[in-house]
Image (spheres, rainbow, N blue to C red):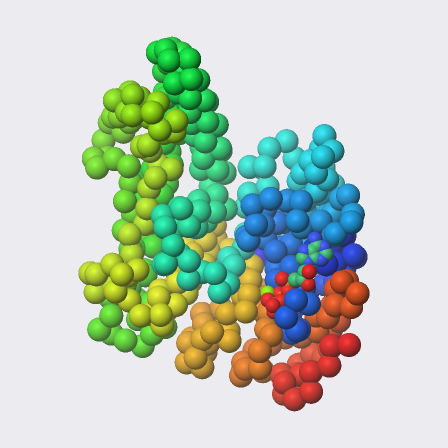
Length: 388
Ligand SMILES: Nc1ncnc2c1ncn2[C@@H]1O[C@H](COP(=O)(O)OP(=O)(O)OP(=O)(O)O)[C@@H](O)[C@H]1O
Ligand SMILES: [Mg+2]
């Protein structure tokens, strides 16, 4: 799929922006704090209805304004669609997603219209941080190819919040939980089954591809990177009933904790290098390669399952890779529409960059200017960057 047009209004440090990116590799070059990541964040909003770096919507509205929006026009197997998000916190509308100027009823309706994979320096968290980061990675990835999965996640969370509320209330009142808890546990178990199956399927697909991808990037045949999904149930049959039993058995403990202690919201993806825990034993460089491999496998799977390439967003990752890895990454990208941000000097193959933009900001307002197209561009901008 290809983004034909991007339009931002009062989004982060963009007052108004409208431009038509190239179908190939677009390079955004600018000083720290100029607005490069903000642009990629806007694209992420149009794909998933939320930021990749903050959980709230309010910070992305241009400071001092009451509302903001980001829209893209996408060309894909579905045809040509305009999709975007309008943000107006405090208003009854809050956040609304529009496809071809019509408000969608549910957030799940937007999934799959624009698919994206974002690479950023924070990807290292996938290796270093706790299970929540890896679950979020899996969830965002699967939601882009399965609306049913996204709905199951939402319903599971909703039912779990109700269960937790009942448990906290019963603790407060010092009485047995409301019998309604059975219904919420049944709803959780049903959705947990969908969540488990989808995660397992995708994690297995990833597991098949990841050792080779890691070795291709690192060039080390003696390093085996493996991933394995660790779900909340040990056996795969009779999931729904088994999970309902687990929830019932945990009620007393959960009442004390005031939260649900078992279920897919505690799952993890285990990562190992040569059969040892990646997090505990791997070097910084190995972890970086592993994080990059996870993103590349995400790209491959989204392409395979949906039948078309997502849009690629590479935020400041080139400068972290040595030349070899950078070249391997560019080779993997091939002809996928890509948005690369760059703040450091570095050597990218100029013949692979189709269009280059300078991102600058003055008085807190960002602007993007196409500076020059064609293979000569990198030489020029690396020699005398001028963003004013
Ligand atoms: N809601 C907002 N309104 C106005 N300006 C904002 C808003 N949110 C962030 N900014 C500004 O956007 C700038 C950061 O933009 P961004 O993160 O895109 O920078 P960047 O070009 O990616 O920089 P770096 O190279 O350091 O990663 C900061 O100057 C910040 O003050
Ligand atoms: Mg940035």
